[in-house]
Image (cartoon, rainbow, N blue to C red; front, top):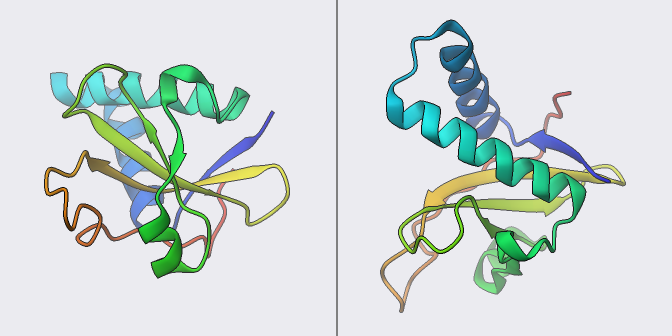
Length: 125
């Protein structure tokens, strides 16, 4: 089992804000739906990063650009336009850091050129 941490600052801010909105009841229907789907994906990722529903694989172009192995997993299976979670292992043993959430890129030739990922600089619990 892995610990899930959020990349700093973008993913940490995004997830904290989304959770706060859902908890307070101020989230939109789309935000509630995203929270539920992302929570389910994070659960599967925590249990087994290779869970079949996640369809996890390495994004080699991002791995080369960032100098670490960057993986991509679905937040919703069998939905081509659904969001994708980008993550890496670490910074500590047994941790997975979520470093991005993006829709599936449409441009096949330069699919991942526009994706910017969070840093692993800070770990949250």
